[in-house]
Image 1 (tube, rainbow, N blue to C red):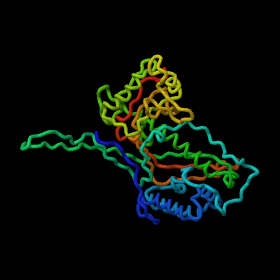
Image 2: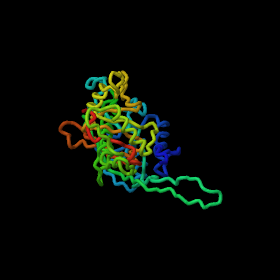
Image 3: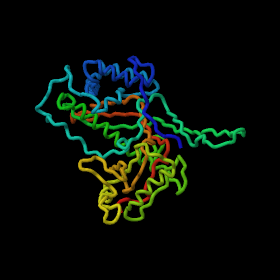
Image 4: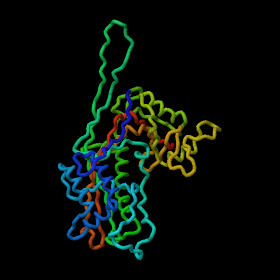
Length: 385
């Protein structure tokens, strides 16, 4: 089986105005670097909530560029760059020209974000395709290699062409919303922009993560890995998951090793993104389950303060995203999460006007696909028995 490593899209260095979609992200970074202040999502929200709504300055230029690159996309709201939702990507220090600091009504501490479940796929090394433009994206996939063999010096050498098919990623709409007070939007400290962007982006990230794992698949919803049928034992069709593993009782070291054997028998090679994913109940059981009797090494090992654990040396993640206490071992680079250029932002200060609150909704186009579903092996029963 050929290498299934897929590197993220490379973006060329050019300056605005852009002529193609792939120009935008680096153009944006260069403009932001040379401007007197970073792009401000909070400024966009404040200007769109004013009466009349009117975007200005750097943010207006960015919106116009995004619209020109999405001429076929009909937007009700304003387009903003997805980079604006990367809360930790840049210095969000408030620049001059914003409202003065108000310390009497907002704590100096960052507002406490809503407690979210722990996301899985990004931490395990899924492939991200960012800033796509246009419609569907078709990616070639090898289903058989050309092969090689030994032949006589003068005899004919038979041809053996490589077999290819395609997987198609098509943009699907996902939205996330948050509600903030009108007064909060006018604060310049603490970092309200980071709070707003994290609240929206976390909600969307968790929804995408859950869909990548369990999405049923439809015209409007991506298909997650658990919606793919599993191969029968001893079969290795690329478009199906690897054969399921059954614990049939308390998890054992032999059962854990069965997951890796199944992937290797399907010619799935570890590129550093092999990872076990399961629930907190399974993690707790495995942290108590010895590999062998009177052998003080456990199925799940976790160092102090370590975010993720290790199972047989592989990354191991527990999350409330996993239902039924199942266990999944996957080569997560085979999972592709694609997003299309531009996030549509809607600012609604009418629906909750009586509460002096504004509803902020971000909508973007995303799809999930798998180059080789065979790169994932799941249990048919609970790992927490």
